[in-house]
Image 1 (cartoon, rainbow, N blue to C red):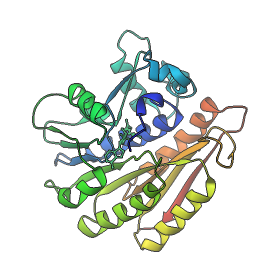
Image 2 (tube, rainbow, N blue to C red; image 1 turned 45 degrees about the vertical axis):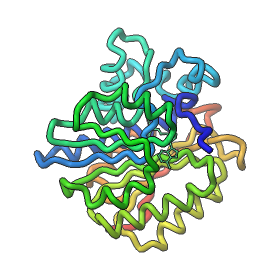
Image 3 (cartoon, rainbow, N blue to C red; image 1 turned 90 degrees about the horizontal axis):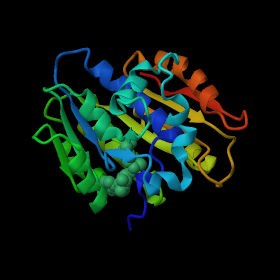
Length: 279
Ligand SMILES: C[S@@+](CC[C@H](N)C(=O)[O-])C[C@H]1O[C@@H](n2cnc3c(N)ncnc32)[C@H](O)[C@@H]1O
């Protein structure tokens, strides 16, 4: 059953971290002219109106993008914030982009996007939010299952974003299987896996399982806005990046301290940059 709707969460602190990492990886891949494929296994609706009932229910964006908007001088955040400002050209924060819209704003004509979204209404919205044409392929399919036929990607260069809701606990296991499959079929792909910290033990286990796969060259970047709360809500979120651009670690080390300061709740913010497996 698909109960998760990203519209309730769009623009929160976890989206900010995820999309900063996405923007930096895409920008690095584009330092070479060669095309790459962008594969988004859990794409969402693509664009979110912050005045909508969903976004207004808990106003999660108020602890995320709302605190950063119009602050392009924040170290390391310029690329990301310029993009958000481009989507809100009147200087008023009205919309927040999902990962597919960020891709559509940044991909070059030679790059291609494959966007998987299982929820029928979000898949339909996504179709409406993406440019028409063959460059952006929207599929109402299981993104985990689709990886087997997508890889290796035609361009032989790829960024794969894996961003499941984790509402079904099986997602914690499915992400490990997905990373193993990607490693078997396209070991050179850059993979960005998002995770929430609701129960810290689940993430400790995820890190251990990942280490046991034997996959090399893995970095973890985590941002927390509150202290861990033992199952009472998401307090931190992270990105695990396999085959990161060599510049990403330095960028995140510069970006995470001001981000943690800006998004802190009750002075309890924290961050981690960890090499889970060396090259
Ligand atoms: C966290 S949201 C994605 C947000 C999006 N990546 C972004 O950053 O804007 C997760 C999405 O995955 C969808 N979903 C859940 N299970 C899925 C699956 N197995 N395959 C594809 N989409 C799935 C949900 O409907 C939801 O829209």
